[in-house]
Image (tube, rainbow, N blue to C red; front, side, top):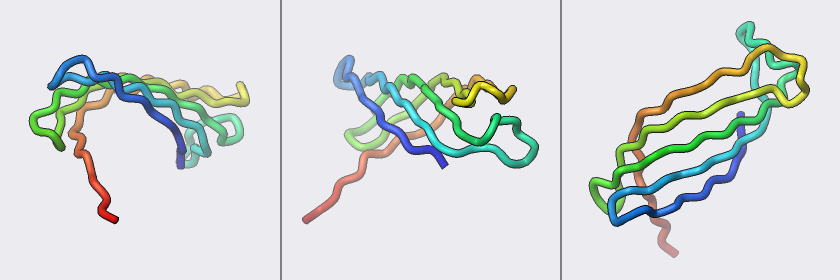
Length: 88
């Protein structure tokens, strides 16, 4: 699994740009990760249909951090985002 951080930059009431970075263990299934430690980054553009629901499209990349693997996929994302709230 991967663990990461992200930052959202509001462009308007409806549009947001999200930047994310991740690192962690990956591999298996014949995927060459050079030892399993990978890093990933992505950027997404979100269009908020409501205060808590958005359509998102983005692009990202993943790379092994030890330099020995051959897997360097570029990823394309299309999805939905929902904001959640916790109550205390």
